[in-house]
Image (cartoon, rainbow, N blue to C red; front, side, top):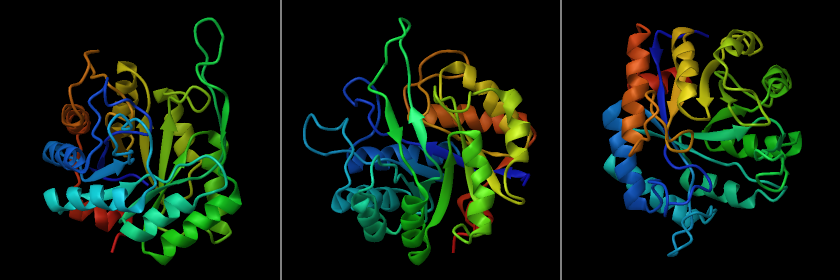
Length: 288
């Protein structure tokens, strides 16, 4: 589905980036300030991961419902209009932590990883950058997430890391697991997933279920901005933030999420489109 207005999402912090070396927000106060900066720059949605709050542990994820609630409440108090999209990504079959967080906070949106991926990366000498891992998202796990999301009125954002996962969305709809309006994220740039190549976009869009909302999540350095431009030109929604990149279109490093969002809004405007307000985004995505 092509849209005249683009929903802009800011991915505030990601899952493991070390706050000691990168300007990612960790505490409720930091996340609220980052969300406000992103909102002021044009974002209607913030995609949030949540971190351990103990000193020296901010690079590690937290599934403590009270930590997650404190972060979300701080964001909503600072920016009442913004839509919170909560991460749920976790390796393994024990998803009690993410489910408890969803039920505690009941965010308007939440990520729903729609398929499995061998999560791999090599160094220049061919050695593994990290121990090879399977980001496992079998149907049984997907169904448990979707049951809790639908019960609590949470709109799922279907994250798709590879082409087969995109094609599976039609089957999830046909099977009744997914409901319309469907929102799909095309995750492009993960080393063992789809490449961050603008030329791929028309083919990927063609594999989506009819009338699906879609956005691109572009992972990488400054070369991803060509992909953002193509996404805007083809009518997709857009996302950036410190989870996805540290680099601006000119190759310089960003100092914050807000600067990245300012650059992305310019890309959208240069394509001839306007930015959706939070109220417009809620209407498009079926958030009630």
